[in-house]
Length: 141
Image (tube, rainbow, N blue to C red):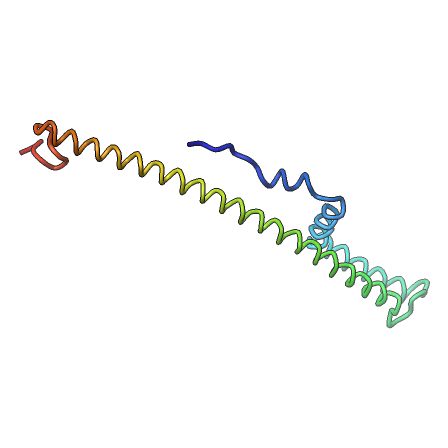
């Protein structure tokens, strides 16, 4: 009645390509407060340096705008790759849940069959040996 236990997530993680692993790491990095803080500090430093010292990109910071646009384009692609991977993980989890539910259903049906057989045996015993009281009969009366 038992079935082997497998960790489907570990098996799935071992099959990832280098690009899928990189997308996951980048998504996790870009979705962190550390990244946001570092990005804000970078923008402030960029503006401060261009206002006070060497002005290689004077206000309105067109070069910075170009970099930010490229970053946004790359982030969009990376997030789509990561979302696609997350969908695959959710689908694998749903498949695992379905298989678990089917196995549990089979085991419950088997247990219910055993229970029916036990009840039939008890009925036969009560019929063959009339002194055996049914539940709720005779014991305290």
